[in-house]
Length: 339
Image (cartoon, rainbow, N blue to C red; front, side, top):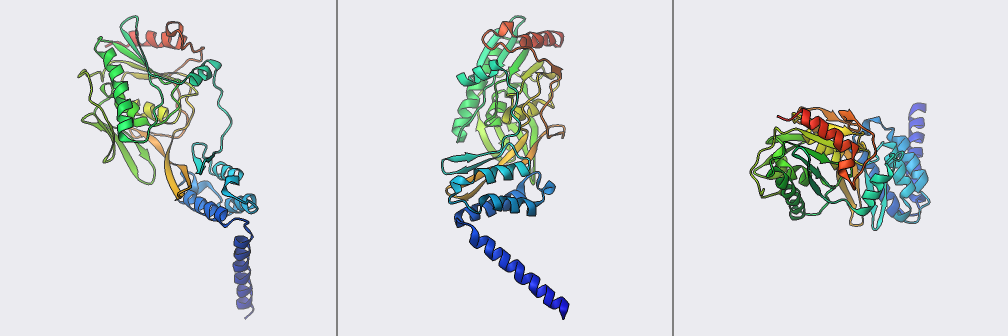
């Protein structure tokens, strides 16, 4: 009898605690958004199993209970992202964006200066018949837009290939992300046909190129019409990397990890190697969440910043690439590894 009475008291207390918690929120819109966000994070985050969700929810409620509007959710949302160790995700409410930033990366003044200018493709034919191709970040909202950017990059590559280059330098030091597939498709002549990598999350999505189109599983994301029919799968490739090389720039590199006669030269990348998925709460509210990792064509999973094969922390010289020490180091390696 006493056990039943104690259980009844406990249930009554829990029910009334939940009722008070729900009613004490100043804004029910805030509570609904917060509850939905936590639920989706718990179900989909790559770090979900490493989190004390009861503690996380309690802390989020403490930060949000007195808020008047979702516009004020910044501290609570940033705390959620920090709790699940997700520095790649972003939360959007109307015209506001909330994210958690880890310790800032150390980026040189020369890189910052170039990023402010806006990064564009750049090609050069260097001494020794070596090609240089700067690959910019690529964003867009449609297959047509991505295809146009992939086509532009591929046209630049074809200009170099038709000159009979013996090796090529792909410069990703200024590539902070966007969409990986137009970048990868744009250099398809350098890559083997078929499977190039995948996203590892709750469902595995394969990346591959077929008939000048880039697919993840059965979804075609971009297409090109190459202006050259030169196969360059065997020429040596050096990919230049640095702390501003991130996100889709890193996935681009993963697509090359299964390629022979290919090295990374420079400094370690930014470490934004998670695959993001988007979730919509309502017409005003959505967020991106890290839900998986990149996997190369050999099955290796990448969970941290990519390390260069040849570490080189010399100063970058984007205005005079012939004086850029990293490029000169890349040229030296390419000459030794010409087929």
